[in-house]
Length: 191
Ligand SMILES: Nc1ncnc2c1ncn2[C@@H]1O[C@H](COP(=O)(O)OP(=O)(O)OP(=O)(O)O)[C@@H](O)[C@H]1O
Ligand SMILES: [Mg+2]
Image 1 (cartoon, rainbow, N blue to C red):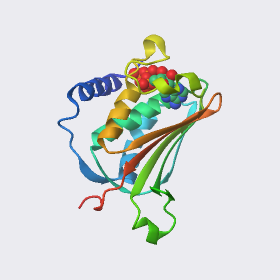
Image 2 (image 1 turned 180 degrees about the vertical axis):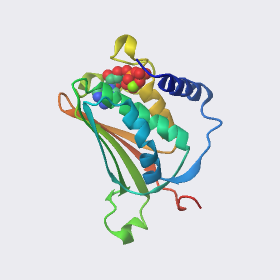
Image 3 (image 1 turned 90 degrees about the vertical axis):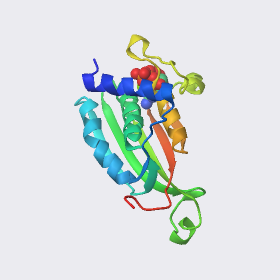
């Protein structure tokens, strides 16, 4: 059963979906602050059988609504948790990447658009290729009465609003990684 807090977040997801985030409160924030700040929320929804590993966490300034980022992260984490009923490892990482690959050369990075890539990985059941096209469809769920099928629809909408993109990699029986690419803000966090 979900806690009252999770129910509240779910309701907020619903509101966000309906109203299209007109009241979005965006600011330039650091990815490290977002991920480290969300850590206790993430830990709180995981059973003891799921090991949480965080890192590496690159510090990239991004322009977004931190409350919506938390929702995005939480929805991905809840899905990862559900995919590991027997336990496993959930990893959250952030890397700085350039449009044409990893930003290894500083001179190139300053010329190329830079992105923060937030990855949520699990060692769970994996996703059957036959349902891949439907993952982000509102109300699509394989969880019966336990799922509303809104989690990834909300994630997709939030990512879209931030000007980002999502990539999914999965192997049946081995696990899944959701990678969310967010454009770096040109200004530094807090300025
Ligand atoms: N990490 C994952 N591993 C395996 N399957 C996943 C994963 N994430 C999503 N899925 C699949 O995608 C479906 C849709 O996910 P989504 O979050 O939109 O809905 P849900 O989790 O079923 O319900 P809700 O999020 O509303 O509680 C899930 O039912 C599940 O089949
Ligand atoms: Mg979900």
